[in-house]
Length: 189
Image (tube, rainbow, N blue to C red):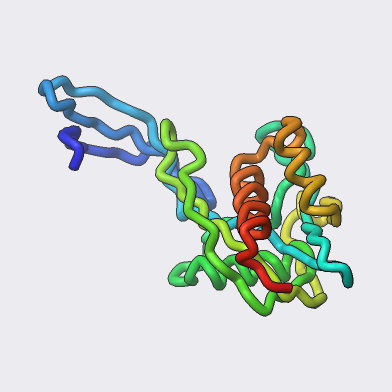
């Protein structure tokens, strides 16, 4: 249990999904200080694995424009947990269908990460999707309308993480954990 304690908070901006607060804290030594915090409903990321007839794993990624970076980013299908009461697994299934037109027989948790703990309370639930079958997609917003779906071998995606070409944290963690599960023999195809 932390000896730091939050003593107050005020919302300074309420956006469509996120809000920004200024929170006041007290340190164990009694010092008070303020921090800006982005409040978030959280997100999901999904690593959809497909297997060819020889059992070689591939992954479906998206290359999507990210306005905050002003460039395209290669990443796993993902989305905000913006439906109140929806379980993370259901959000993962919805985002997988919406973004890349896949339905998974199995959605298994990989981990939960905190991508920006210095500035946000956001958490991202990462899942592994297997037994994927095509379904109609339903892309939302201009970025998704223009994004490119990329299907590459899992080993190549892991190499892109190691080379620094896949820079998105949820994607890097998800791809490395999926490859680890595959190499340990935890996956059946």
